[in-house]
Amino acid sequence: MAAPHVLAHTHVHSFRLASGAEALVARVLGAEGGVGFGFTLNQDAGMARDMAAWDALGRSRGIPLWGLLGGSYRRKISIVKDDSPAIPADWTALRKDILAGRHDLLRIDPFAWGSVEMLQTIGAVANAFDLGVALLAPNAALWEVQYCVALAATLRGEDTRVIHRGGFAGSSVAVSDDPGVGVTWNAEPGFAGIAWENPA
Image 1 (cartoon, rainbow, N blue to C red):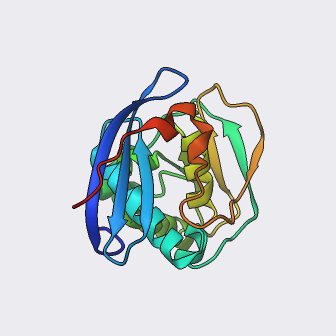
Image 2: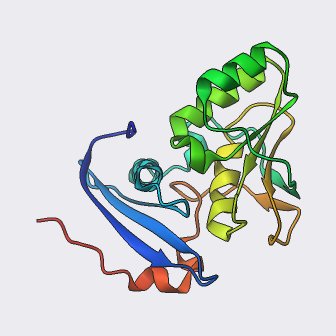
């Protein structure tokens, strides 16, 4: 997975959220000194590292994810319940389906697709074909919703939203202006207690 800049150190921890779900949480140090965090609930540490690298880049430059990726196309993102399945993380199959006109809304689980770059590619193709994009927060965890909101803000198109399968209360979330990926890390009480390695 491509990182947005050179990393000097990476450390991944397994972490129990307040809900009881297990997350992998990554902390990276950029070569220029920026610190960033990332997570995943699907046990793919690569996803957590990719998010952490973008977080570090945004924090080191003092700008939010949408500022790194070309601007925010909306200030609030709709959050809706949707039980439809997400499109499998297979670029070749998705491309064929789009060309055949099989979708009007792309339901994408960004945690399954693995990187910010891949989501940006899907978003650009969706915009070119006038398709909506719905980013799935698969477990409806606050961190997932916040990250999906930050990503959704960077995608063109009027029909961009965040979806969940239940367990999230609220119909919209404001796009964060905080530097980094827009996740409120201290929303999980145990996050502050993680014993991170200090690089030599």
